[in-house]
Image (cartoon, rainbow, N blue to C red; front, side):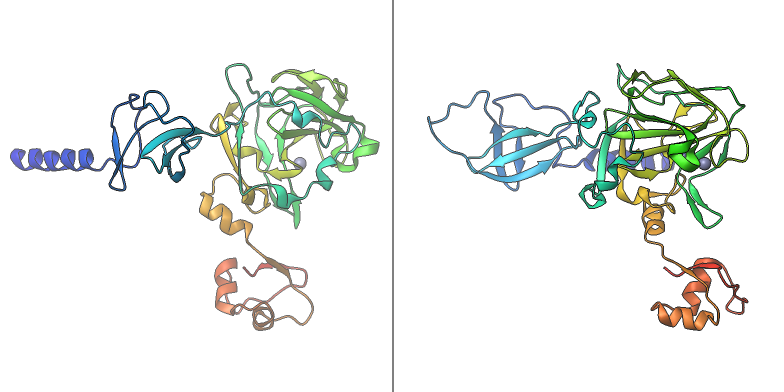
Amino acid sequence: MKRYIISILLVFTAFTLSAQDEDYFDEAPEPGVLTRVFGGRRYTIEPYVIERCPGAIRVAVDTIHTDDKYVDVVLFDDQTWDYLHHARPGIDSTLVFDEYWSTEDLYVYRKYPASQIPETVDLLLVDENHGYCVPIKGKVTSKYRVRHSRPHTGVDLNLDTGDTVRAAFDGVVRCSCGSRETGGYGELIIVRHSNGLETYYGHLSKRIVEPEETVRAGDPIGLGGSTGHSTGPHLHFEIRYKGQTFDPERIFNFETGRMVADNQFTLRKDYFSIYSHSGQTDAESYAASQALYYKVKKGDTLGKIAARNGTTVAQICKLNGISSKKVLRIGERLRIR
Ligand SMILES: [Zn+2]
């Protein structure tokens, strides 16, 4: 029995050793050494050592990805290769404070077409000089979801009136607005961060920062309250990218006060859907973002709804977890895709 286990271990070790991907570099090879063969051709390192004919032009013939998504290897027609470094996301960009900036317009990115946002955006959230802080540590009492058939585009965090609300990241205060201007948000602070994110802090009893003021993560920016559309003291907290909201619980665990996202967070476009939230896999999130809902009208039957929307009764029942004999109520929402 013992010998049997050992031989299995040996086979397993041999397999892992041979399973390394040949098209990736584990570390930078030494200049000037004939190092690797790609597609049956040998490539040496350029431009450190190899003497080249003055004025010779080499033509890139292929690009190979490395484990680091910001570094590729370019292969040239003269059998040399070189690193291609792409710009890494940074935190110190000042550009985000020049464009689409307004201290009065809550939704200044309204004019920014969502179609311009790439499918994925890499955001550096924290580094050695820029930290984070949950605005208030506590229970999430309402999540980023559809609530009473309306999208709730942030999280509600439990607090007592007068509790200190803090800036989530370093940034510049874009808006410090009173209840009269913000409608449902009540007394509201908006902070813009240099990676392009904005955070919204609503229902405050008091705002203690001014527009254009620079804040550090953890700086007090207001006191918790229940102003605007609110049934009791809580903080309504949103995170937006170019005006688009996504689930703040993708970034923070508000109960522990810890960041749950990696320092470098990959924001996917489907996260902007209200049906896409933390706890889903990316595949589930994407599927949820493609969801389509139908509001039941007078005279509707499952058969009619299915026919009109190019689907089947069975599919609607499966998506909504209902029986085909279910009695429909007018105004009820059914997922049809
Ligand atoms: Zn809320």
